[in-house]
Amino acid sequence: MSTTARGARGNAPAGAAPQPARAPGPPRPPDLSALDRAPQLRARRSPRWIAAGVLAICLGAIGAVLLWDGAVTSQQVLRVNAAVARGEVVEAGDLGPVTIGSLPGVSVVPAEELTGLVGQHALVDLPAASLVPAGGVGAPVVAEGTARMGLALPAGRLPSGTLVPGESLLLIPVPAPDDDSREARQPVVAATLVSAPAVGPDGVVTLVDVTVAVEDAEAVARLAATDRLVVARVG
Image 1 (cartoon, helix red, strand yellow):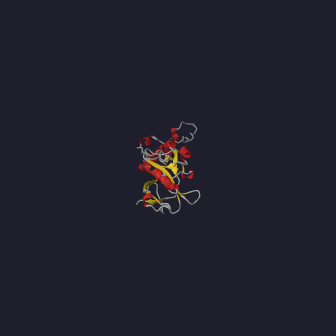
Image 2: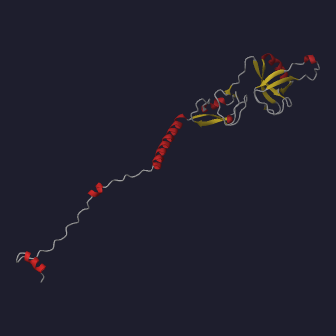
Image 3: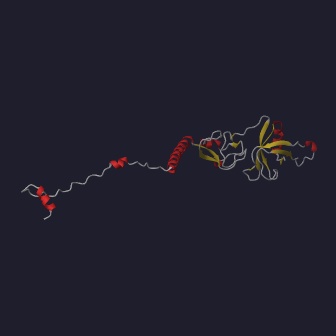
């Protein structure tokens, strides 16, 4: 027996029972203090994503404002469906409603006035797809010192081609068949076309409105009643 073994037994009291081996205790928790002392790294945010988020917020706000503004300022006005020349009668299908937003400085006519404008005259040229301006349709206005006259002209008494309201015309008297006297001939009368020519209900005569000087109105009426007028376009 070795000296070490004897020494170990010599330390124990005589007659004492041997001590059992000590069981290991529970594991100690990890020391987190070192982690607390470690420098913290802040998460980096991408500037690109930040800019994208700000842009999305701005676009959403602008869209909301536009929707609100459109809902508040939208209005129904009259639009020209088919072109109407100045002086022509406006028919039911020529105009129609359209919804628009706010147009500061643009003259328009509310859509609810459509019924009252049908049958009136175009006081200005109304191009197709344009908005009807205020005062653009109504009763014909006769300038002071002039008279508006309606003529029913037989075939061959008007120049060929399109006559546009506002054109200058000459009303040329035609002598009666039994009148060969130069002294009896009437002078040529200057006129202005008011409405575009239209075929009459009988399909033979052409209807046209013109304005002439008041002093010429009676003579023109007499000549028109006897089919003694020819209309010439002034170049």
